[in-house]
Image (tube, rainbow, N blue to C red):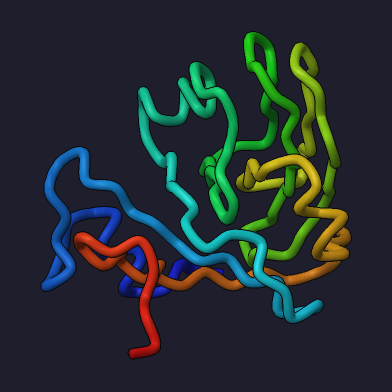
Length: 153
């Protein structure tokens, strides 16, 4: 399955959604099979240094955060400081394999995968995500400048 037009344009700098070099693309990730949200602010690592570095050097992932590495069929947690959940996807965004609470200094692969999502440990369990489920990606809502939360007033 092809990526949505808005996503491809944002990634490759085309159209009205043109991004500046180094601009962050953030996505929401929904498990449409289970009707749950895996991430509300997921980064995309689709080239060079960002794919190579991944989550290395970070102390952890905040609520709703994650990293989508594409293309990718194997990852390692060598040198990481925290455990993560892994979701291996095919080109149609169908989950091929999940790994929960993968500690530092491990490797994991799925040769039928096209990409991998790295999430905070516990997200797979909390959302009941399983192999065979389908995911959808949407633009993340941009943060409101100067506001930590939205008041109902």
